[in-house]
Image 1 (cartoon, rainbow, N blue to C red):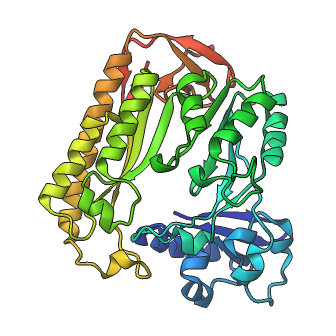
Image 2 (image 1 turned 120 degrees about the vertical axis):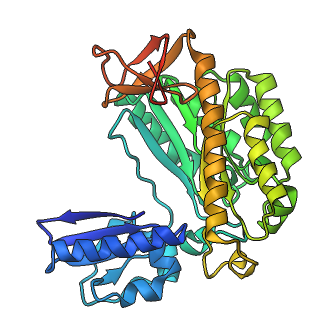
Length: 390
């Protein structure tokens, strides 16, 4: 999807776009046209992945006054271009480097520590939109998180396009590039008053031993891991150009649960990848129960014209839709069983501003009316209401 923001004092509209699926690109174009209709005389600039991946088409839209390269969008200087100037070029923008922003509209802060990707999954346009992998230095990250912790933020979520590749482009430590485990350890050491540190999506094959130890032994690292799995059939994983097979995912899940039994696992799964047979789909379905995935994100395959997967034999859209629906049903059933297992169990819940909160394992919990946002409460759920503990 795309988001837009307007600054009335500057008569400026910024559309931050997504291009991960064809539907996201369609919605980006819709957002641009809608924004232009709402403010026909404003200056309209587009950034984000669509501004990279579908650059020529977006730039050609009559509603668009200019493009800002994705890697430059967090640099305030990029937005001072006059309306008559052409879009920033990717080569210029990447020189500005990676900068972080955080969102704390609720009670947690999202800290981007890495962006870009050096891998070449056959279905993915993200490397085209975000460029090569780039990491933020440890000192910069710990300084930002220490400031947030001092302000009372109770939970920090580390994010990245390819989070577990963090550090590969930084100066070596003891002769080796730093790994994500070193960053997590540094954050915990520099911010002793930070109650909760959560990790966003991880590539299981890149989890280093130090990170694995912290995930499974450190109470302040939340027992909630979301894995970038994508599929449960080995042949499809190979055609996706993923770097793991099914048994790698199963082994990691077994290790995580053996060392931290309360851990909750989630995953991204794609339905209807080109050449996917019914047997491959069955393997995808069975992965949900085998790994006890309780936070699943299901995506129907969407061909992107610039990717190798778009040139493979495609499945009929109805088949993709049916398989996605079956995956979602299996995921919902698995999650329901997990929620049932949590009834009667005391949970440590971070209260948010909408009357709900999240437990350490990321189960969503309805709060009592007296709960103060930003505080951590111990609650014992007794029922499930619309997929939420209460």
